[in-house]
Image 1 (cartoon, rainbow, N blue to C red):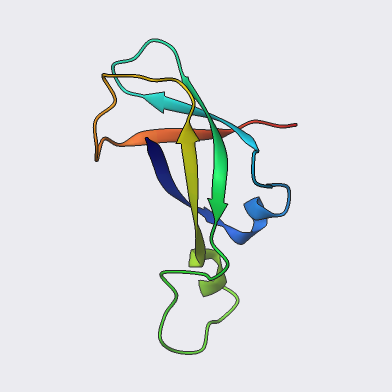
Image 2: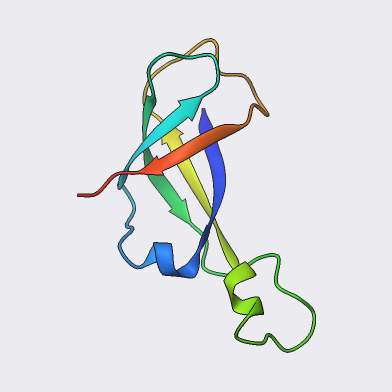
Amino acid sequence: LFVETFLEEKELSHLRLGHPVEILVDGLSQPLQGEIFFIGREAEFSPKYIVSEKERKSLLYRVKIKVKDSEESLKLGMPVTVRLRRR
């Protein structure tokens, strides 16, 4: 089971594979624990034209997080909030 999210470039500088993550799910009292197992190498959602400095903020990178806790109440497609933990 994994969670997929998108992060801005500025957030990637301190992330590595295996980085710990908390996953907050509506309806669950405790956050789930996870770790990053994939960081995209290419920006997504970028415009098809030259990107101005203002538009660079919308460049996002796909990040996948393996859920460590086996949680039956977590269902495919559920929205979650990802909290990056400081190492």
